[in-house]
Length: 219
Image 1 (cartoon, rainbow, N blue to C red):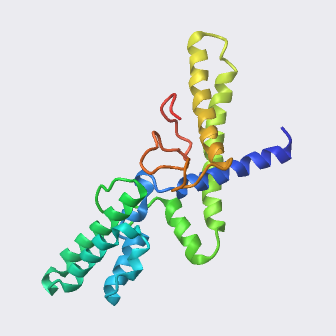
Image 2 (cartoon, one colour):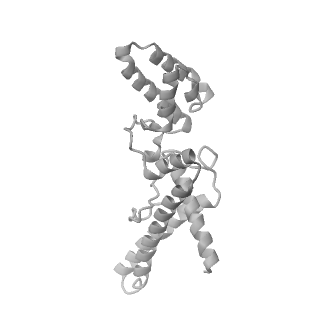
Image 3 (cartoon, rainbow, N blue to C red):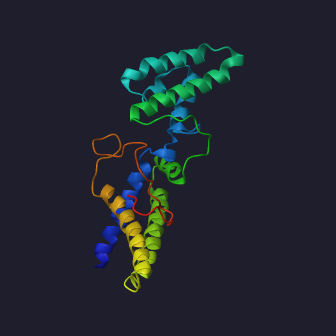
């Protein structure tokens, strides 16, 4: 493979990783964290006593529920204010998640967002994706190299015995499935919320970017 083709493949995989990490799936869905963007807007709405800042997070048909919950917060007695706010946060996030087709498993504590998601938010706020690109590129590169090295080492001995052959197959499947998942996204599949895109909470196995082995045969 030429240097040009290697570079193209590498950046395709990097782009795929960015797309995957941007999709709100499992623990990465920081919309349910107390320092996530949904709750940040909820705090702003409460501060100015105007529900408008949070309405963008829910569908039109769900506005009535959110407005009703918001009114309870604004009218809550001082001693019940904190509890009312927390209940409103839960209602808002639950409605938002339902609109994405994802379950709500409760509010998560602040600081529980994965590094890539936090960096994605910083990129938007700071006006540059450079740090995010480097973070994801480094992790993807490490993931590919680790899987390649394991498969390449096993390849040298795959025909020496059945046991060594199976060891190669396991490494090979892990290696090729990892790259395949990334490339499928980079090839132009629909994004989150579009037909054929990533459906929240429906991934059978989370794509790993840290180089660790995943369960054999998982895609």
